[in-house]
Image (cartoon, rainbow, N blue to C red; front, top):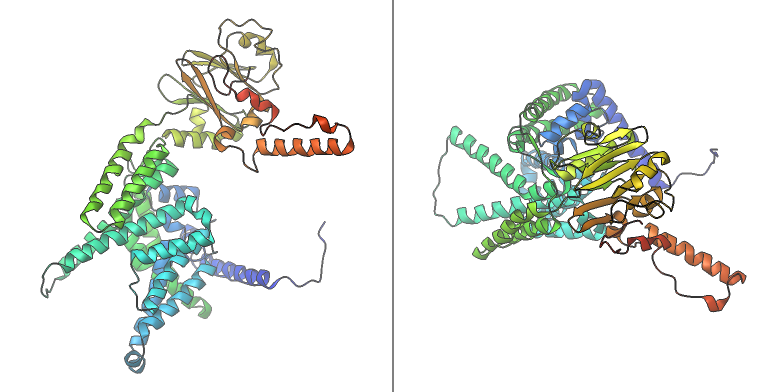
Length: 554
């Protein structure tokens, strides 16, 4: 039931509502003046509303390495703020009394700072955009204080400010990749600048062709540096790499930076006057060009390569080595290539599980003799299965893997063999007696009777690993590794440990409260008070058993 009230909304809520109304009005005007998906992309670049972009276009931009163009972040903030800075400075430079008597560069920096704030509010103030605004604010403040704007010191200051305000950002892939790219670009170009300054050279008059080649090589160098800097983060977090992203970015980024985004600023200036039609049409031509590049590159063979997950130690070695190379300016920075090489050599060492069970026990994947996963999955488990395939470096669609090709199935369940073990996934208790005696691993979708594996004589001497809904809920997801001396079982709860929000902590907390209530009510005498174990009663199933298997459920 909704209750009406005459209370005035808080001031901050009214400001937010007004800002959202302006964003909606701008989005509606853009979509009206530039219909279709081109208008939807234009709205995404200006107001951050991406709902009108189809999945096919999103996938094309993603597979071509251009998806960062559709998501407002550092690229758009820099280009928009730079366009505002240039527009203000050129305008003031045309007014002689102002240009000759005032520091118009500082005025332009202040105006760009305000303009970037407006763009931040208009684009929806996503976390990535806020982070980009904080970073660019440091740069413009440096200009206003007569400091070098593009310097590693400013990058460090902006990172420190973001981590003070949002300390969780250190684990955010967007934060890591943004600062990796910026640090790499500034460090390399500072080195190029120092090397160029140390060489004697006179004035040279370069022709148009030489200038064009210089700009093209600069764009290519920038793309290479940024791609190399973010590659370890993309592989570690997303398990793929766009091999042809350099080609797409080489063509589409100049189009976006020099043509599309300045026209987006022109659209914003023209909107209040009702003159946005022609800037929108011209912007649409550039957007169509970017979309064509994205679709053409994404359609090329080998545009996206899945890479199996790499060990955290390998990733850490590459990051530490990269920072060593980028942050030092002397010759010993070359030593950073040693940990980078070690990290690269370490990447294929990580072991992948032989069996994965979802947190609700309804999706089960088993690695076959060919080294690839085959799965039994319900319809709602496709997303989870797709994430497992990404982790495995497998590019097959989840629906193909979920066809249970490696299993023998009937109405009561499915059976397969892997690593010399029989694995049974049972949906009905009627098949329980057949597989209790022979299966090494059993996943059931009903509460397992205590007699299974106990009263039934087993044909193998290995204890049975049985995972029912209760075990799935307690473990919150299982992975199994088949080894010559047994089967290792690991759960999400094992890896996560006891946290205030985890099941083990909640069970312990509830038991302590129940015990205290019993003590206060006199149900339990005080002399029976004993320390309570921090793990729930059923956690004892995670102890090593006689077979040397961790986490087995007898």
